[in-house]
Image (cartoon, rainbow, N blue to C red; front, side, top):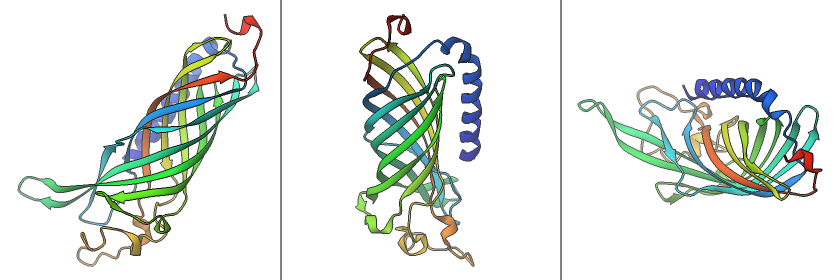
Length: 237
């Protein structure tokens, strides 16, 4: 389901790009450097073993980082964003299904934090790229998960950045990002899954690395980017 949501969001972003093209083709930005902050919600975007269900969760703390913008072509409004930051994916894992209430009685929060490097290409505010995350911490309901059990996370990213204000000093942007992991969070899900003894395999089901969680997330945030060079006045007014 979430994969369909992410694909739909990407299509919507391209539609926005087409509509905004005429209006934004006059907006040129120099090389920039600044700080970003964003709030994220996520879900495991991959199937679970029987007896478990995925759920959305919001991060308790915001993602923060450094953002660099490099213009590639003024005529076509092309640029490259490079984000380096501290990012977290939190999602719920539900189990203990109650047939009478038709609800899952237990909802555990899984949290995985990374130092990420994210290059994305931009055209009229629409961004496409990827992210590589290096695990720095993780926990399940507050119980630490050793980072030796985690692997680097590679994510596909799509987003949109809109300037709220800009002048010769810099620009204030609001941004939206959608991400989907291309690989699972654990090096070996079968042996490292913290729920393997809490929610064991049901019936004849065989647990394999196919069920390794892949976070899918959406993020809304702000950044302020300082101009590294100054363009002529006509670029700002």
